[in-house]
Length: 205
Image (tube, rainbow, N blue to C red; front, side, top):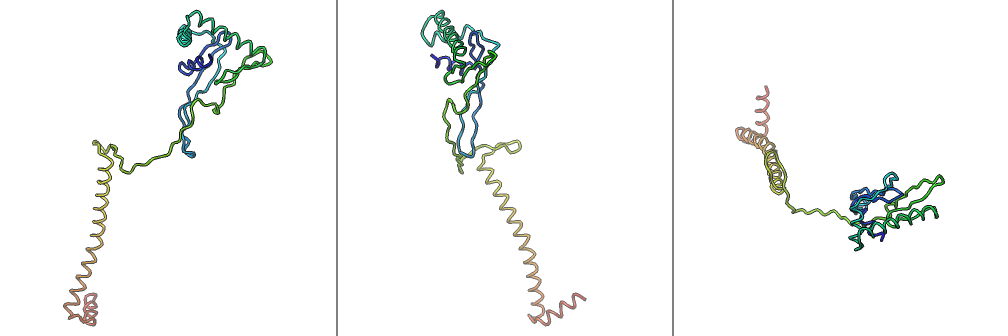
């Protein structure tokens, strides 16, 4: 069954085919499609190497356990599968490995492999909407101590309030001093504007 072979390839990342070569499965990690709000699932990028074609003992043990047959029957079954695959490529010019790609023979007799594209993904896309939790608590490293994000917000807001209070006092104190000085000048001149003007002219001189 081809599903058994595909499962082995997915787990072990390689599978050898007698008289043909080896298939390899390189894992492509999850990709975030931010624009479409989704996650593209991990994929397998398949490649073919014609220089190694000898399956190891563990491979045949895997087939035997999956098909519930003896080891020698697993070896016979897989060798027949590999023979049929090579014969189909030779007689028909190409042969599909379901779920993986297609083998074909060039005019010079060389076997090439064309893997399936990302349209044949093993897993579906996953919708991924970004969720922002305003009240979520998490730790933040500040210098040599660890505080929560709530404590950090309170600390920052406290500093901002102190800064605003300082700016308000820096503006209010000069205004109060000027207002107090003006009140004093008017008071000593009996609230007479003309006397105030004369008093200020004398100060300038």
